[in-house]
Image (cartoon, rainbow over all chains, first blue to last red; front, side, top):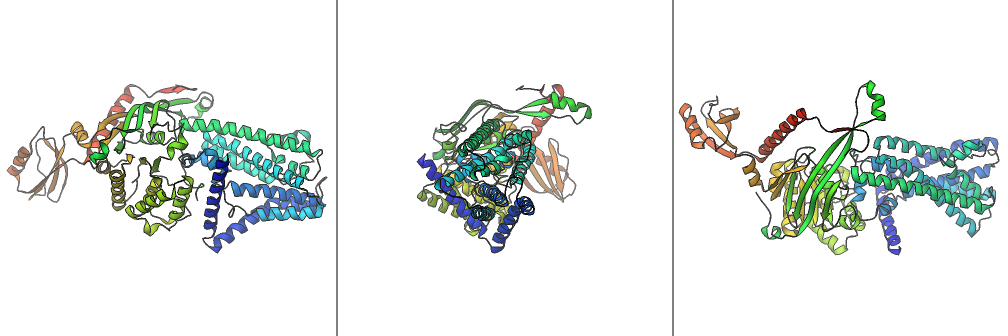
Length: 281
Length: 358
């Protein structure tokens, strides 16, 4: 276990260095990267922000709580960009383009390659600053009583949210083992669905729609539900945390099951399609 | 022309062993007719393609084996089986005493793979960065890495391109870098799937020479696929010809020639621009008084042909050659194709309807 942790840290260090070297090729590259990521991130939350500004909040959510929700959703997205770049979040592209072969000829467990190869802390961090900025700003406005326990919950919720997004992406992405081209389209749409709807509070939705958005398409578990728990809207907090953790475990288990089945299928059929872009360029 | 060191090849240490290996793919047969729409959805027709049909193959330590065959013969499937990327449908694949799929992590650390149409290089990084990446991911001890790096930089002439971005390299340079990358961890087996595809003569020669030296000096076992028979002959002592998933020939090149054909080429330079008709020889081409004939020395001797020619024209110069290996094998492939076509007419290819049918 300790050996695996050391190895993962060493690989993250390697990929971080490569990422820095990539960005350091020239100032234009660096500026373009950061500006475009920043604009994309801000654009993703602008609609909700403007609504909150115009109506001084949305439904039961105050303006400051909405800002917290937006900051949280951007942070989750930024961390996925940082840790699962190079199409490791869009796993259908790796699978469907025959690029798993590149990973399978590396002498390390597959999970280790998937966990480390997409680490891009420099080029992937475009949304990190706006996300953290919104969280700090809203935290001050809400005068949150931030204790070590709250930080623990915050970290656990962020991890659970990331796990749910990745599990959802891997579940749909694993279809690429059987239908490479179609799964790429589905995976892109599933990503858009999660990231574009995540910054919206779902309180006003009727029962069935709400249940669907925290189960079938777990948009509500990406930012809305974890934010409610962190802001103390849902009580008791432990029940909300338990529900979130169990959901993350269930989604992850489904993704692992499907991915493993797909991998077995891949071992029998291989990939008849190969595209060279999207994994190392 | 065998180029192997007998000392290296004399060992009986088997590094690759395929026993009765079968690989089956199932392909959906889709009709373009609108009327078949529902049928395509509900009861899809599945064609069973046997990529490998009971292949038995062994490769000894230090051996260079050319693995050839027409498109679709099963060459790349074999390389993928040996790379641990595919599992066999039936039969057993062992390499370096391991199962390439079950023991993947341990196994791939001891082999090198190069796919000619793909690159392992990081596209937006200099070659040096990819090499460093390889050192860390493969966990190569620093002294071994430095030693191999020095070797590949020198033998493959990488110094000029070592700090160039992969995407700025020519195909030949990229291939050299890819080959070097595959060797940094000092693999015991090198699997090369069309490593010289699309390369010019110079780049090709450089890579072939390197593989030969690597085999001679370090005893690396090499399994190489290519469509260029002359190249394979230069590289390998042994050729395995694959046809429709079965090994059609396994031996050395001279034996292959002997088995396939005794065809020779006769080139006559005459005073006349018109070619002379020679009984027992077939005119292949003629240009500006230079006429090329193919003949079988078992049917007609060279002296008889020269006598025929001299009787009707002034022969200024004479050259004879063995038929190039490419032509020999092309004839063979053509023969196989004809045979397959004939068989297809008699018995249509296996088509099953729905479900698992292989």
